[in-house]
Length: 160
Length: 182
Length: 178
Image (cartoon, rainbow over all chains, first blue to last red; front, side, top):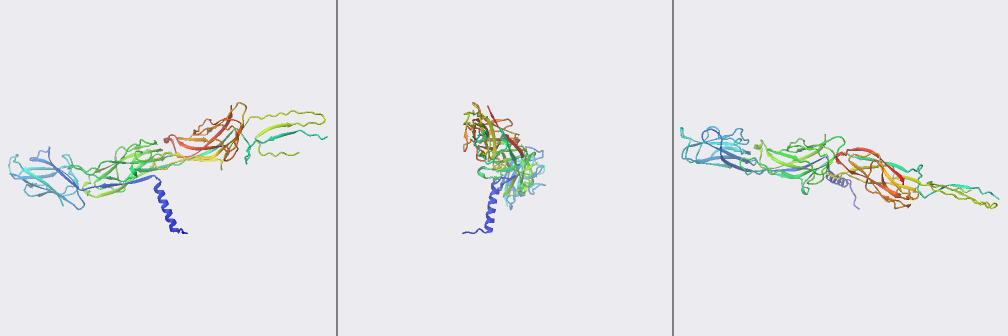
Protein backbone atom coordinates (compact mmCIF):
# COMPACT_ATOMS: atom_id res chain seq x y z
CA UNK A 1 0.00 0.00 0.00
CA UNK A 2 1.25 3.47 -0.85
CA UNK A 3 2.00 5.66 2.15
CA UNK A 4 1.18 9.35 1.96
CA UNK A 5 4.15 11.30 3.16
CA UNK A 6 3.69 14.71 4.73
CA UNK A 7 5.38 16.28 1.71
CA UNK A 8 2.97 14.57 -0.67
CA UNK A 9 -0.04 15.68 1.39
CA UNK A 10 1.26 19.23 1.57
CA UNK A 11 1.68 19.27 -2.21
CA UNK A 12 -1.89 18.02 -2.65
CA UNK A 13 -3.19 20.75 -0.34
CA UNK A 14 -1.25 23.42 -2.23
CA UNK A 15 -2.63 22.19 -5.54
CA UNK A 16 -6.18 22.14 -4.20
CA UNK A 17 -5.92 25.64 -2.70
CA UNK A 18 -4.38 27.05 -5.89
CA UNK A 19 -7.18 25.53 -7.95
CA UNK A 20 -9.76 26.91 -5.55
CA UNK A 21 -8.17 30.38 -5.69
CA UNK A 22 -8.33 30.38 -9.49
CA UNK A 23 -11.94 29.22 -9.48
CA UNK A 24 -13.18 31.90 -7.04
CA UNK A 25 -13.76 35.51 -8.07
CA UNK A 26 -12.46 38.20 -5.75
CA UNK A 27 -12.70 41.96 -5.40
CA UNK A 28 -9.98 42.43 -8.05
CA UNK A 29 -8.95 40.96 -11.38
CA UNK A 30 -6.23 41.67 -13.92
CA UNK A 31 -5.32 40.99 -17.52
CA UNK A 32 -2.29 41.34 -19.77
CA UNK A 33 -1.89 43.96 -22.45
CA UNK A 34 0.81 43.55 -25.14
CA UNK A 35 2.16 46.56 -27.00
CA UNK A 36 3.77 45.71 -30.32
CA UNK A 37 5.88 48.50 -31.84
CA UNK A 38 7.47 47.85 -35.21
CA UNK A 39 10.16 50.13 -36.55
CA UNK A 40 8.94 52.43 -39.28
CA UNK A 41 10.05 55.39 -41.35
CA UNK A 42 7.74 57.48 -43.42
CA UNK A 43 8.42 60.99 -44.78
CA UNK A 44 6.94 63.35 -47.32
CA UNK A 45 7.59 66.80 -48.74
CA UNK A 46 4.66 69.15 -49.26
CA UNK A 47 4.31 72.71 -50.40
CA UNK A 48 3.86 75.06 -47.50
CA UNK A 49 1.22 77.73 -47.48
CA UNK A 50 2.38 80.20 -44.97
CA UNK A 51 5.33 82.47 -44.21
CA UNK A 52 6.40 85.71 -45.76
CA UNK A 53 10.08 84.81 -45.79
CA UNK A 54 11.62 84.86 -49.23
CA UNK A 55 12.00 81.64 -51.14
CA UNK A 56 9.95 78.56 -51.79
CA UNK A 57 8.52 76.96 -48.69
CA UNK A 58 7.99 73.28 -48.10
CA UNK A 59 6.94 71.09 -45.19
CA UNK A 60 8.86 67.96 -44.37
CA UNK A 61 6.64 65.50 -42.58
CA UNK A 62 8.29 62.55 -40.79
CA UNK A 63 7.13 59.59 -38.73
CA UNK A 64 10.05 57.56 -37.47
CA UNK A 65 10.22 54.71 -34.98
CA UNK A 66 13.68 53.25 -34.50
CA UNK A 67 15.02 50.10 -32.91
CA UNK A 68 17.07 50.68 -29.76
CA UNK A 69 20.38 50.60 -31.65
CA UNK A 70 19.30 52.57 -34.70
CA UNK A 71 19.64 56.18 -35.68
CA UNK A 72 18.55 57.84 -38.87
CA UNK A 73 19.46 60.84 -40.85
CA UNK A 74 18.05 62.80 -43.75
CA UNK A 75 20.30 63.99 -46.49
CA UNK A 76 19.65 66.37 -49.34
CA UNK A 77 21.12 66.65 -52.82
CA UNK A 78 20.06 68.23 -56.03
CA UNK A 79 20.73 69.84 -59.31
CA UNK A 80 20.04 73.47 -60.07
CA UNK A 81 21.07 75.70 -62.94
CA UNK A 82 21.80 78.44 -60.41
CA UNK A 83 23.35 78.19 -56.93
CA UNK A 84 20.62 77.32 -54.41
CA UNK A 85 20.67 77.38 -50.62
CA UNK A 86 18.44 75.28 -48.46
CA UNK A 87 17.34 76.39 -45.01
CA UNK A 88 15.78 73.84 -42.70
CA UNK A 89 14.01 75.02 -39.66
CA UNK A 90 11.79 73.27 -37.14
CA UNK A 91 8.53 75.00 -36.54
CA UNK A 92 7.54 76.52 -33.23
CA UNK A 93 6.72 74.44 -31.25
CA UNK A 94 9.38 72.01 -32.38
CA UNK A 95 8.53 68.36 -32.82
CA UNK A 96 10.13 66.15 -30.19
CA UNK A 97 12.69 63.57 -31.27
CA UNK A 98 14.37 65.54 -34.04
CA UNK A 99 18.11 65.38 -33.89
CA UNK A 100 20.53 68.16 -34.77
CA UNK A 101 19.75 69.91 -38.03
CA UNK A 102 21.23 72.64 -40.07
CA UNK A 103 19.69 75.71 -38.55
CA UNK A 104 21.89 78.67 -39.19
CA UNK A 105 23.12 79.54 -42.62
CA UNK A 106 21.51 76.69 -44.50
CA UNK A 107 23.15 74.31 -46.95
CA UNK A 108 24.37 74.96 -50.46
CA UNK A 109 22.64 72.47 -52.73
CA UNK A 110 25.10 70.00 -54.24
CA UNK A 111 24.71 66.95 -56.48
CA UNK A 112 25.97 64.72 -53.62
CA UNK A 113 24.19 63.87 -50.36
CA UNK A 114 24.66 66.22 -47.47
CA UNK A 115 23.21 65.51 -44.04
CA UNK A 116 20.61 68.07 -43.18
CA UNK A 117 19.00 66.32 -40.23
CA UNK A 118 21.18 64.03 -38.13
CA UNK A 119 20.51 61.62 -35.29
CA UNK A 120 16.87 61.24 -36.12
CA UNK A 121 15.31 58.82 -33.64
CA UNK A 122 11.65 58.18 -32.92
CA UNK A 123 9.53 61.15 -33.78
CA UNK A 124 6.51 62.33 -35.60
CA UNK A 125 6.04 65.82 -36.89
CA UNK A 126 2.37 66.43 -37.65
CA UNK A 127 -0.12 66.97 -40.45
CA UNK A 128 -0.31 70.68 -39.75
CA UNK A 129 2.01 73.58 -40.41
CA UNK A 130 2.97 73.72 -36.78
CA UNK A 131 5.07 70.90 -35.35
CA UNK A 132 6.72 70.20 -38.67
CA UNK A 133 9.97 70.96 -40.48
CA UNK A 134 9.97 73.97 -42.75
CA UNK A 135 12.29 74.01 -45.73
CA UNK A 136 13.07 77.18 -47.61
CA UNK A 137 14.88 77.11 -50.88
CA UNK A 138 16.49 80.31 -52.12
CA UNK A 139 18.81 81.20 -54.93
CA UNK A 140 22.28 81.64 -53.54
CA UNK A 141 23.24 84.65 -55.62
CA UNK A 142 23.47 88.07 -54.01
CA UNK A 143 20.88 90.27 -55.58
CA UNK A 144 19.44 87.45 -57.69
CA UNK A 145 15.80 87.72 -58.65
CA UNK A 146 13.27 85.60 -56.69
CA UNK A 147 12.24 83.55 -59.70
CA UNK A 148 14.62 80.86 -60.83
CA UNK A 149 14.76 77.94 -63.16
CA UNK A 150 13.75 74.40 -62.52
CA UNK A 151 15.61 72.91 -59.56
CA UNK A 152 15.54 69.30 -58.50
CA UNK A 153 15.98 68.56 -54.79
CA UNK A 154 16.11 65.00 -53.46
CA UNK A 155 15.73 64.09 -49.78
CA UNK A 156 16.80 60.66 -48.60
CA UNK A 157 16.32 59.00 -45.22
CA UNK A 158 19.13 56.69 -44.13
CA UNK A 159 19.04 54.27 -41.23
CA UNK A 160 22.28 53.49 -39.43
CA UNK B 1 -76.27 -7.81 44.69
CA UNK B 2 -73.38 -5.49 44.00
CA UNK B 3 -73.98 -2.07 42.62
CA UNK B 4 -72.08 -1.27 39.52
CA UNK B 5 -71.22 2.35 39.60
CA UNK B 6 -71.46 4.47 36.47
CA UNK B 7 -68.22 5.12 35.05
CA UNK B 8 -67.59 8.18 32.98
CA UNK B 9 -64.74 7.79 30.64
CA UNK B 10 -63.07 11.07 30.08
CA UNK B 11 -60.43 10.39 27.57
CA UNK B 12 -60.06 8.67 24.28
CA UNK B 13 -57.00 9.14 22.13
CA UNK B 14 -57.18 9.86 18.47
CA UNK B 15 -54.18 8.70 16.65
CA UNK B 16 -51.39 11.17 17.20
CA UNK B 17 -48.58 8.75 17.74
CA UNK B 18 -46.15 11.53 18.57
CA UNK B 19 -43.23 11.06 20.88
CA UNK B 20 -43.81 14.48 22.41
CA UNK B 21 -46.91 15.96 23.92
CA UNK B 22 -47.76 19.54 23.08
CA UNK B 23 -48.90 21.33 26.15
CA UNK B 24 -51.17 23.65 24.18
CA UNK B 25 -52.66 22.90 20.74
CA UNK B 26 -54.16 25.92 19.11
CA UNK B 27 -55.11 26.86 15.57
CA UNK B 28 -51.95 28.96 15.06
CA UNK B 29 -48.24 28.40 15.39
CA UNK B 30 -45.10 30.16 14.23
CA UNK B 31 -41.38 29.78 13.88
CA UNK B 32 -38.45 32.05 13.06
CA UNK B 33 -36.33 32.31 9.92
CA UNK B 34 -32.86 33.83 10.35
CA UNK B 35 -32.12 35.79 7.17
CA UNK B 36 -28.45 36.53 6.54
CA UNK B 37 -27.28 38.50 3.47
CA UNK B 38 -23.52 38.72 3.14
CA UNK B 39 -21.73 41.71 1.64
CA UNK B 40 -20.30 40.75 -1.74
CA UNK B 41 -17.67 42.43 -3.87
CA UNK B 42 -16.77 40.33 -6.91
CA UNK B 43 -15.23 41.38 -10.22
CA UNK B 44 -14.10 39.36 -13.22
CA UNK B 45 -12.59 40.35 -16.59
CA UNK B 46 -14.24 38.44 -19.41
CA UNK B 47 -12.88 37.95 -22.91
CA UNK B 48 -13.95 35.83 -25.87
CA UNK B 49 -13.11 32.15 -25.36
CA UNK B 50 -11.77 33.06 -21.95
CA UNK B 51 -8.80 34.99 -23.42
CA UNK B 52 -8.15 38.28 -21.65
CA UNK B 53 -4.75 39.18 -23.16
CA UNK B 54 -5.09 41.96 -25.71
CA UNK B 55 -2.55 43.40 -28.15
CA UNK B 56 -2.21 46.98 -29.30
CA UNK B 57 0.01 47.65 -32.34
CA UNK B 58 0.37 51.36 -32.98
CA UNK B 59 1.36 52.15 -36.55
CA UNK B 60 0.73 54.65 -39.32
CA UNK B 61 1.13 54.94 -43.07
CA UNK B 62 0.86 58.72 -43.10
CA UNK B 63 4.14 60.62 -42.88
CA UNK B 64 4.08 63.00 -39.97
CA UNK B 65 1.13 61.33 -38.27
CA UNK B 66 1.47 59.80 -34.82
CA UNK B 67 1.33 56.02 -34.77
CA UNK B 68 -2.02 54.87 -33.50
CA UNK B 69 -3.52 51.49 -32.68
CA UNK B 70 -7.02 50.39 -33.50
CA UNK B 71 -9.14 50.57 -30.35
CA UNK B 72 -9.71 47.23 -28.62
CA UNK B 73 -13.16 46.59 -27.12
CA UNK B 74 -13.00 42.85 -26.61
CA UNK B 75 -12.97 42.82 -22.81
CA UNK B 76 -15.87 43.18 -20.35
CA UNK B 77 -16.05 43.71 -16.60
CA UNK B 78 -18.50 41.39 -14.84
CA UNK B 79 -19.49 42.48 -11.34
CA UNK B 80 -21.66 41.24 -8.49
CA UNK B 81 -21.91 43.64 -5.56
CA UNK B 82 -23.98 43.64 -2.38
CA UNK B 83 -23.51 46.70 -0.17
CA UNK B 84 -24.81 47.54 3.27
CA UNK B 85 -24.93 51.35 3.40
CA UNK B 86 -21.99 52.39 1.24
CA UNK B 87 -21.26 52.69 -2.48
CA UNK B 88 -18.25 51.31 -4.30
CA UNK B 89 -15.71 52.39 -6.89
CA UNK B 90 -13.83 50.34 -9.46
CA UNK B 91 -10.25 51.57 -9.83
CA UNK B 92 -7.77 50.67 -12.56
CA UNK B 93 -3.99 50.78 -12.76
CA UNK B 94 -1.16 49.39 -14.84
CA UNK B 95 1.97 47.57 -13.74
CA UNK B 96 4.11 49.58 -16.16
CA UNK B 97 3.83 52.52 -18.54
CA UNK B 98 5.04 52.35 -22.15
CA UNK B 99 7.48 55.12 -23.15
CA UNK B 100 6.02 57.42 -25.75
CA UNK B 101 2.48 56.10 -25.50
CA UNK B 102 -0.49 56.69 -23.26
CA UNK B 103 -2.52 53.56 -22.74
CA UNK B 104 -6.08 54.72 -22.21
CA UNK B 105 -9.17 52.77 -21.16
CA UNK B 106 -12.80 53.73 -20.91
CA UNK B 107 -15.74 51.72 -19.55
CA UNK B 108 -19.15 51.82 -21.18
CA UNK B 109 -22.32 51.87 -19.07
CA UNK B 110 -23.74 48.48 -18.15
CA UNK B 111 -27.02 47.61 -19.89
CA UNK B 112 -27.38 43.99 -18.70
CA UNK B 113 -28.21 42.48 -15.31
CA UNK B 114 -29.95 44.46 -12.56
CA UNK B 115 -29.23 46.90 -9.76
CA UNK B 116 -27.30 50.08 -9.13
CA UNK B 117 -24.48 50.05 -11.69
CA UNK B 118 -23.00 53.41 -10.80
CA UNK B 119 -21.53 55.96 -13.19
CA UNK B 120 -18.73 55.38 -15.71
CA UNK B 121 -16.01 58.03 -15.93
CA UNK B 122 -16.89 60.11 -18.96
CA UNK B 123 -13.51 60.29 -20.70
CA UNK B 124 -10.77 57.70 -21.27
CA UNK B 125 -8.51 57.15 -18.27
CA UNK B 126 -4.78 57.42 -19.01
CA UNK B 127 -3.30 54.49 -17.13
CA UNK B 128 -0.64 55.02 -14.50
CA UNK B 129 0.83 52.77 -11.85
CA UNK B 130 -1.57 54.35 -9.32
CA UNK B 131 -5.24 53.43 -8.94
CA UNK B 132 -7.66 55.74 -10.72
CA UNK B 133 -11.46 55.48 -10.70
CA UNK B 134 -13.13 54.22 -13.84
CA UNK B 135 -16.62 53.46 -12.43
CA UNK B 136 -18.08 55.17 -9.34
CA UNK B 137 -21.16 55.00 -7.07
CA UNK B 138 -21.79 51.27 -7.53
CA UNK B 139 -24.45 49.85 -5.20
CA UNK B 140 -25.99 46.40 -5.07
CA UNK B 141 -26.03 44.92 -8.56
CA UNK B 142 -25.11 42.08 -10.83
CA UNK B 143 -24.08 42.60 -14.44
CA UNK B 144 -24.43 39.16 -15.97
CA UNK B 145 -21.46 37.00 -16.91
CA UNK B 146 -19.19 36.65 -19.91
CA UNK B 147 -18.72 38.90 -22.91
CA UNK B 148 -21.57 41.17 -23.92
CA UNK B 149 -22.47 41.51 -20.21
CA UNK B 150 -21.34 44.16 -17.80
CA UNK B 151 -19.11 47.14 -18.56
CA UNK B 152 -17.44 47.01 -22.00
CA UNK B 153 -13.82 48.20 -21.87
CA UNK B 154 -12.25 50.11 -24.76
CA UNK B 155 -8.46 50.39 -24.85
CA UNK B 156 -6.39 52.81 -26.95
CA UNK B 157 -2.68 53.49 -27.37
CA UNK B 158 -2.03 57.17 -28.09
CA UNK B 159 1.41 58.65 -28.77
CA UNK B 160 2.42 61.29 -26.26
CA UNK B 161 5.08 64.03 -26.08
CA UNK B 162 7.63 61.51 -24.83
CA UNK B 163 7.69 59.84 -28.21
CA UNK B 164 11.39 60.46 -28.76
CA UNK B 165 12.06 57.75 -26.16
CA UNK B 166 10.06 55.15 -28.01
CA UNK B 167 11.92 52.26 -29.55
CA UNK B 168 10.59 49.44 -31.68
CA UNK B 169 9.95 46.61 -29.22
CA UNK B 170 7.36 44.34 -27.74
CA UNK B 171 6.26 45.52 -24.32
CA UNK B 172 3.62 44.29 -21.92
CA UNK B 173 1.78 45.45 -18.85
CA UNK B 174 -0.69 43.98 -16.39
CA UNK B 175 -3.87 45.99 -15.99
CA UNK B 176 -5.61 45.50 -12.63
CA UNK B 177 -9.20 46.41 -11.72
CA UNK B 178 -10.16 46.61 -8.05
CA UNK B 179 -13.60 47.22 -6.51
CA UNK B 180 -13.41 49.03 -3.18
CA UNK B 181 -15.75 50.62 -0.66
CA UNK B 182 -16.08 54.38 -0.74
CA UNK C 1 -61.48 -0.70 38.69
CA UNK C 2 -58.99 -0.95 35.92
CA UNK C 3 -57.31 2.24 34.98
CA UNK C 4 -57.19 3.32 31.41
CA UNK C 5 -53.82 4.74 30.49
CA UNK C 6 -53.71 7.98 28.50
CA UNK C 7 -51.10 8.18 25.72
CA UNK C 8 -51.88 11.57 24.11
CA UNK C 9 -54.84 13.80 24.42
CA UNK C 10 -56.41 15.45 21.45
CA UNK C 11 -60.06 14.68 21.68
CA UNK C 12 -62.39 14.78 24.51
CA UNK C 13 -65.20 12.37 24.25
CA UNK C 14 -67.57 12.00 26.98
CA UNK C 15 -69.44 8.75 27.16
CA UNK C 16 -71.60 7.74 29.92
CA UNK C 17 -71.92 4.03 30.22
CA UNK C 18 -75.02 2.82 31.65
CA UNK C 19 -75.50 -0.41 33.46
CA UNK C 20 -78.47 -2.58 33.66
CA UNK C 21 -79.90 -3.14 37.01
CA UNK C 22 -80.75 -6.77 36.92
CA UNK C 23 -83.28 -6.35 39.61
CA UNK C 24 -85.23 -3.37 38.26
CA UNK C 25 -84.54 -3.66 34.40
CA UNK C 26 -83.74 0.10 33.94
CA UNK C 27 -81.89 1.30 30.80
CA UNK C 28 -79.88 4.44 30.29
CA UNK C 29 -79.48 6.41 27.08
CA UNK C 30 -76.12 7.05 25.52
CA UNK C 31 -75.27 10.55 24.29
CA UNK C 32 -72.08 11.17 22.44
CA UNK C 33 -70.92 14.35 20.75
CA UNK C 34 -67.72 15.04 18.87
CA UNK C 35 -66.92 18.76 18.75
CA UNK C 36 -65.18 20.37 15.77
CA UNK C 37 -61.54 20.85 16.74
CA UNK C 38 -58.51 22.43 15.30
CA UNK C 39 -55.12 21.35 16.40
CA UNK C 40 -52.08 22.78 14.73
CA UNK C 41 -48.56 21.88 15.54
CA UNK C 42 -45.32 22.69 13.78
CA UNK C 43 -42.49 20.33 14.39
CA UNK C 44 -39.07 21.61 13.28
CA UNK C 45 -35.97 19.52 12.90
CA UNK C 46 -33.25 20.35 15.40
CA UNK C 47 -33.87 23.78 16.88
CA UNK C 48 -36.64 26.08 15.87
CA UNK C 49 -34.47 28.59 14.00
CA UNK C 50 -34.14 28.28 10.20
CA UNK C 51 -31.11 29.95 8.54
CA UNK C 52 -31.62 31.38 5.03
CA UNK C 53 -29.11 33.20 2.83
CA UNK C 54 -28.20 33.95 -0.78
CA UNK C 55 -25.01 33.29 -2.70
CA UNK C 56 -23.45 33.66 -6.15
CA UNK C 57 -21.23 31.26 -8.11
CA UNK C 58 -19.06 34.14 -9.36
CA UNK C 59 -18.78 37.77 -10.43
CA UNK C 60 -21.63 38.94 -12.61
CA UNK C 61 -24.06 36.25 -11.52
CA UNK C 62 -27.35 37.05 -9.77
CA UNK C 63 -28.07 36.01 -6.19
CA UNK C 64 -29.70 32.66 -5.59
CA UNK C 65 -31.14 31.33 -2.37
CA UNK C 66 -30.51 27.81 -1.17
CA UNK C 67 -33.70 26.05 -0.05
CA UNK C 68 -34.31 24.89 3.52
CA UNK C 69 -36.66 21.94 3.90
CA UNK C 70 -36.06 21.08 7.54
CA UNK C 71 -39.50 22.11 8.80
CA UNK C 72 -42.58 19.94 8.94
CA UNK C 73 -46.19 21.00 9.65
CA UNK C 74 -48.20 18.43 11.51
CA UNK C 75 -52.00 18.84 11.60
CA UNK C 76 -54.95 17.15 13.23
CA UNK C 77 -58.45 18.43 12.64
CA UNK C 78 -62.12 17.48 12.64
CA UNK C 79 -64.31 19.72 10.51
CA UNK C 80 -68.05 20.27 10.72
CA UNK C 81 -70.45 19.01 8.12
CA UNK C 82 -70.13 20.90 4.85
CA UNK C 83 -67.07 22.83 6.04
CA UNK C 84 -63.54 22.94 4.74
CA UNK C 85 -60.36 23.86 6.57
CA UNK C 86 -57.67 26.23 5.33
CA UNK C 87 -54.16 26.86 6.62
CA UNK C 88 -52.86 30.34 5.88
CA UNK C 89 -49.40 31.80 6.34
CA UNK C 90 -47.98 35.28 6.87
CA UNK C 91 -44.63 36.82 7.85
CA UNK C 92 -43.69 39.46 10.37
CA UNK C 93 -41.67 41.60 7.93
CA UNK C 94 -40.66 41.94 4.32
CA UNK C 95 -37.00 42.05 3.20
CA UNK C 96 -36.08 44.83 0.76
CA UNK C 97 -35.19 43.43 -2.65
CA UNK C 98 -35.84 39.80 -1.71
CA UNK C 99 -38.90 37.57 -1.83
CA UNK C 100 -39.27 34.94 0.89
CA UNK C 101 -40.79 31.95 -0.88
CA UNK C 102 -42.54 28.82 0.35
CA UNK C 103 -43.51 25.51 -1.16
CA UNK C 104 -45.68 23.11 0.87
CA UNK C 105 -45.30 19.47 -0.08
CA UNK C 106 -48.33 17.18 0.05
CA UNK C 107 -48.60 14.99 3.09
CA UNK C 108 -48.29 11.43 1.84
CA UNK C 109 -46.17 9.39 4.20
CA UNK C 110 -48.52 8.93 7.11
CA UNK C 111 -51.92 9.86 8.40
CA UNK C 112 -55.41 9.68 7.10
CA UNK C 113 -58.30 11.83 6.02
CA UNK C 114 -58.80 14.72 3.63
CA UNK C 115 -55.44 16.46 3.64
CA UNK C 116 -56.34 19.19 1.14
CA UNK C 117 -54.47 20.88 -1.67
CA UNK C 118 -51.03 22.42 -1.15
CA UNK C 119 -49.53 25.53 -2.74
CA UNK C 120 -46.11 25.85 -4.26
CA UNK C 121 -43.75 28.73 -5.03
CA UNK C 122 -45.63 31.30 -2.95
CA UNK C 123 -44.20 34.72 -2.10
CA UNK C 124 -44.88 35.25 1.60
CA UNK C 125 -46.26 38.62 2.70
CA UNK C 126 -47.55 40.47 5.74
CA UNK C 127 -51.15 39.32 5.27
CA UNK C 128 -52.48 35.79 5.53
CA UNK C 129 -52.62 33.78 2.32
CA UNK C 130 -53.86 30.21 2.02
CA UNK C 131 -51.23 27.53 1.41
CA UNK C 132 -53.22 24.40 2.27
CA UNK C 133 -56.85 24.42 1.16
CA UNK C 134 -59.91 22.16 1.21
CA UNK C 135 -58.87 20.31 4.34
CA UNK C 136 -61.36 17.86 5.72
CA UNK C 137 -61.17 15.80 8.86
CA UNK C 138 -57.72 14.32 8.98
CA UNK C 139 -54.51 13.77 10.85
CA UNK C 140 -50.94 13.80 9.55
CA UNK C 141 -48.84 12.57 12.39
CA UNK C 142 -46.36 14.95 14.00
CA UNK C 143 -42.59 15.39 14.12
CA UNK C 144 -39.83 15.35 11.56
CA UNK C 145 -40.92 13.36 8.52
CA UNK C 146 -44.61 13.69 9.28
CA UNK C 147 -47.13 16.12 7.88
CA UNK C 148 -46.46 18.76 5.25
CA UNK C 149 -42.81 19.41 4.45
CA UNK C 150 -42.13 23.16 4.27
CA UNK C 151 -39.44 24.47 1.92
CA UNK C 152 -38.29 28.09 2.28
CA UNK C 153 -35.89 30.02 0.09
CA UNK C 154 -34.97 33.60 -0.86
CA UNK C 155 -35.38 34.97 -4.41
CA UNK C 156 -34.11 38.28 -5.75
CA UNK C 157 -36.79 40.87 -6.45
CA UNK C 158 -35.19 44.25 -6.98
CA UNK C 159 -31.43 43.97 -6.82
CA UNK C 160 -30.83 47.64 -6.13
CA UNK C 161 -32.73 47.41 -2.83
CA UNK C 162 -30.81 44.48 -1.38
CA UNK C 163 -28.48 45.30 1.52
CA UNK C 164 -26.09 43.13 3.45
CA UNK C 165 -27.10 42.31 7.00
CA UNK C 166 -29.01 39.91 9.24
CA UNK C 167 -32.63 39.91 10.35
CA UNK C 168 -35.24 37.51 11.76
CA UNK C 169 -38.60 36.84 10.17
CA UNK C 170 -41.40 35.11 12.10
CA UNK C 171 -43.59 32.88 9.93
CA UNK C 172 -47.06 32.23 11.34
CA UNK C 173 -49.46 29.50 10.23
CA UNK C 174 -53.15 29.80 11.06
CA UNK C 175 -55.96 27.29 10.65
CA UNK C 176 -59.49 28.38 9.88
CA UNK C 177 -62.59 26.68 8.61
CA UNK C 178 -65.70 27.77 6.78
